Amino acid sequence: MNYNSMSEQERLMNEINTLGFVMFEMAEYLDTHPFDRDAIDYFSHQTRRRNQAMREYAVKYTPLTLDTADACNKEWLWALDPMPWEGGC
Image (cartoon, rainbow, N blue to C red; front, side, top):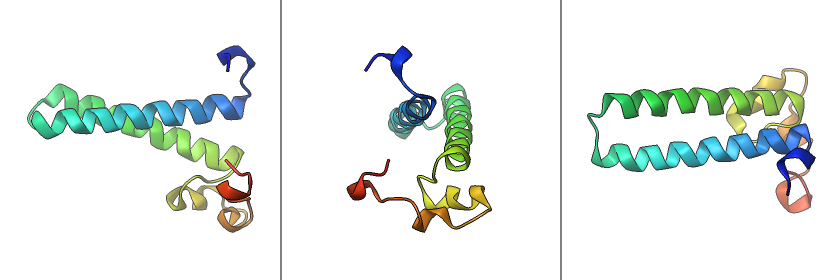
């Protein structure tokens, strides 16, 4: 899919997935370089970015994980939205 033709929701989901990949790769690197302060700082920064994107997604669309379900405050949306096998996310 062309990035320009993506909806805001798709772009945000793409960002969440990309940041998740970066975090996973950095965790692998840190497993073998546990004292690399720059890598630890980079991992922490990307983790904060992903957490913020997850909270934003939860507020605008639907929570993707239980820890972001309370970001919606209005209702327990976790139980109201369709599950992935029902066509959600």
